[in-house]
Length: 46
Image (cartoon, rainbow, N blue to C red):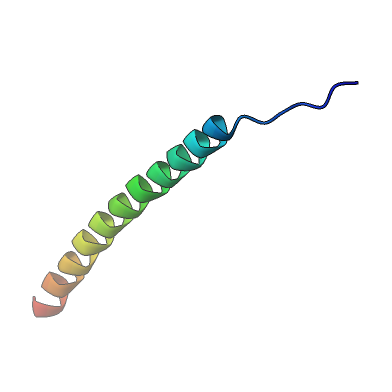
């Protein structure tokens, strides 16, 4: 049986895609938290 050789470029590309997804999710979470904290601040002031 022949061993499968993993392509280094494919591994790097999939790792990069995973990091990109994590970065997008972190940016969305930061925006959501900023809006939430701003609304809480207005509720405290009111």
